[in-house]
Image (cartoon, rainbow, N blue to C red):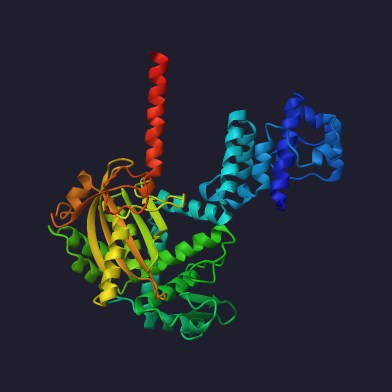
Length: 498
């Protein structure tokens, strides 16, 4: 892997600082010996400047080291893990500036760290290699952390959506239709919209939308999209334009992530589309009425969704913006599952946790997720209806889940299941979970509705202690290993202390 120029500067700066400390020289003393100003040496050590050859020669002479050693990328044993970190380009690829972290300052802190921290850094790099963690994985993880830190609510985008609606005088009846968004995209932003080509493309026919840039951009929409999905794709494109987001993906689902700004801008444009289609004040009022019901009424929730002409995924994602902000329920999470008809695997495509990591959560060990999770069981229920061809709308249901493997916390899970268009052989669910606590009980009056099923759930079958579970699809080998390890530890302690 080629090393980025800024990382070469950082490595040179680390080496210079390291050698100066070994020689017990201050910046002032090195300045006198080399004839280079203190400020310039300081810039070099922080990785902000890379000196010309004559200055490197002066520094090497002052430190009494070989020129070639000074310019090499090799560091001593203590600093070697930091060099590996920089050579991996992880530091450069991570958007540290989002968190107000200066790369040079971070490296300076790491260079002062004890050997144990260097070993820890080395371990992290090794883990990332073993699990084939890509830059895309890092970008996605950082974006998720960024969203969670902001409680999944961005006032500036909310205001931009309101400004857009006022400027173009649409959405007066609280419902924004795809026809008016498409008209705006064509007349105000100079687009051409094609509803046919994408659906017949050999490799892109399963994509919802693709944008071809140019003086007159073309938005290709898959003809199999329903009007709700079409509205979102049009809102997404308008979001890129109205928010002035230039670094972007050209497809509805980014295939190749080239920078953090690209994935962040995609999230911002998506957020704009949802805010455009579902007014925050109106939706909050509708949810308040819904939560005051003593009984859980899935049909009423679906009616609210239909009122805003929103797809299931759009609607639940919007709930995760609104509920923490307006109802102060922060112990909340969202997860999406997908399932190919006939397969034994269920894929967790997306998860978002506010106020800490809740259960369930992703497992990267190729294990089978607990079939008692509402997000999985509702897909199974939906597919039974598919076989009978009796479904006409998304399936919606609720469950109280007690997570026995981690915290024993209880959550009210509200899940939706539907076919994942434009694919016809894949079904999906999207669920929102709210921790059952005193605040939640005051807000959601139907939390104790006896018709809502109650389930004890684990994380994966392999780690679950519910040995008599009728939904189990894999042997609990990880749980058994854990129990055996505990027995061995207790036996060893007994033997030593007896």
